Image (cartoon, helix red, strand yellow):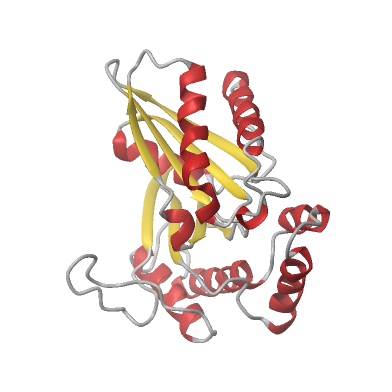
Amino acid sequence: MIKASSILGKVETALVEANTIMDNKIKSSLYLYDGPFSSVLNENSILAEKLKLPLCQDTGFIEFFVFIGQEISLEEPISDTLNMAVRRAYSTNPYRYSVVRDPLIHRENTGDNTPSVVHTFMVSGRELEIRFLVKGGGSENLSRLFMLNPTTSQEEFIEIIVSSISEGGARGCPPLRVGIGIGGSSEKSMLLAKFALTRELDSRNPDVGYAFLEEKLLNEINSLHIGYQGLGEGITAYSVSIETAPCHIAILPVSLAIDCYLCRKGVVTFEDR
């Protein structure tokens, strides 16, 4: 049995850290940038951590990926625990509430940044792993689904992804973190693309072919020269991560997920000993 209070406390702390403390790899990249507003961006990261203020006014919605070992028992539904963690983190800190209850007609704000988006997966073992993304609206709006012809070549695949980022990348607050899901079904490919954003920035797909595609895409995207905040200087993307799944012989689903220059994410783990 893993106590709900233990999960609640660790997730709440991780959410606050993700919103206020810039990842060291992002800091290192920003330090190398000396183009427009570089001093402002660096000062922002320093003050946010020092004063415990959000790195960005768009403190986003939270998307969780939860892997539950089959030998684990939980006190309550994991979505209840995670929503409480979000509610506490966002209501006790100066974060914006960005979730509306009804998506089309009324769009009234829920007032506590819940509910979150929670994906759960049953896996083997005695561990509970919770990954999350803090997703702002600008980068989320760049999500794309492409139902490609199964005969699509690697060159055509690269062109489609790069063209999409060329068209809208500046609106996602670059440099971007790019996640790509290939295969499965339409919804599975998007889930894979989102999950790819939870990987470490310098990780590579274990398959040599897909690792090559990640590097090739990164080079092509950076050759667009969109640059920091869309101002044409510095890198356009930190990294590209690809996740794949088997699919039907007559389809080739490809999804694109984008994260902004802050790449706010986290992971917490628990083990039932």
